[in-house]
Length: 164
Image 1 (spheres, rainbow, N blue to C red):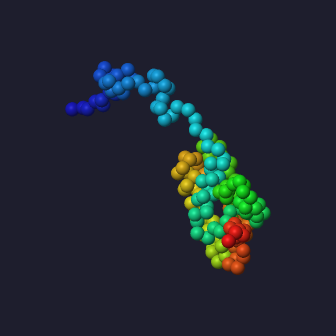
Image 2: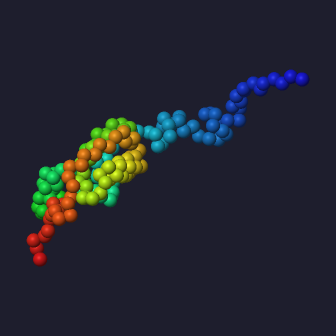
Image 3: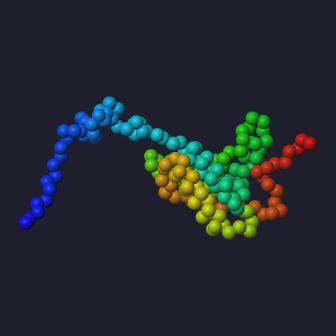
């Protein structure tokens, strides 16, 4: 008794015009693909910078973002009526491609924290937030620690109000 392998035969007699099954409409015939794949989505650098800036600020041990000079200019700009709100993109630079992005962050850490642990936590939080919200692959997050906030230093980020 010998067994013969079944021949791979394709019978499309009970399937619709696309071979998808009886009565299924031909999705590719009219629009050229599934509705979710028609067209391109582009994400601006500023969008990724905002996401990364907010994600970095959420990490314990991060006191501020940006260099001393950019924080000083930001504090002055915040004092001027109509000068805008605090910039969430301060200290963040993003380069966005079609499917990937790279980020450079400049942070100020609080005195007493482990800089390497804070940098690792910032990387993890930023990568998670950017990839989840944009679908872009984050290829690198470079972090520059520009300062350490000492407990007795005045805070440039929050200027005291002169009004009583």
